[in-house]
Amino acid sequence: MNYTGSVPDTRAHRHDWMEAMACRNEKPELFSEAKHAHEARITCVVRCPVRAQCLAHVQDLEHGLSKDRRDGVVAGLTGHERWRLDATAPGHGTHPALVFAGEPPKCGTYNALLRHLWRGDRVDPDCWSAEVRRERLNRVTTEAGQAEEEPELAPAPEPPAEETKRPPAKQPPAKGSTPHERRVYRLWAAGCSDLQIARRMAVSVPQVQRVRDRLGLMPNLRTAKAS
Image 1 (spheres, helix red, strand yellow):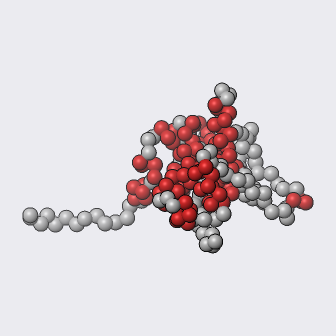
Image 2 (cartoon, rainbow, N blue to C red; image 1 turned 60 degrees about the vertical axis):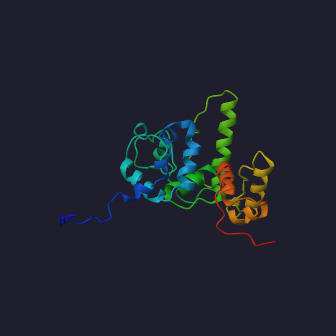
């Protein structure tokens, strides 16, 4: 083989991170259709290793854009949510932007989840449970034959003075519909890691991960002490 004198390009390029996006392996309609918003959010928040880069990219691209120019789920946020969270976007006269000034919303609420997603914070299990409850409510509403609509987001309220020192109330996430799922949930709620759950139930770690994903549970970073 003759030497051509060419040198391979090993430089880091601006959008190299896109090669690692979890959404590259999913169908486009998962992120474009409203009925799949919950599954799309799970892919972004739980499975994507480059959500921080994706979030910064979409915030830069959509800065100041109107609501009708934002589509689909990107970086774990719907187009409507990204519009409400962008204070520079037009059309906030009727629906004020969510800027979360002052006291942050209580952990375990929908507004707290949005704040984490927009700031690029790690989403804790308490706040993720708000998304799980909201998705289950939407599913029940849809199955009952009622129109599914994205709820209107209210600005984060200032807590009353007498409640500022109270600890935030924890809301349980989905507990599962089968004995197997409910046992995974109980061990997860006790702080067990995927490996600890798998050992106690005599199943594989991937099996535990699949059940946890179905329930919308974040992995426990702090493992429980062996009992």
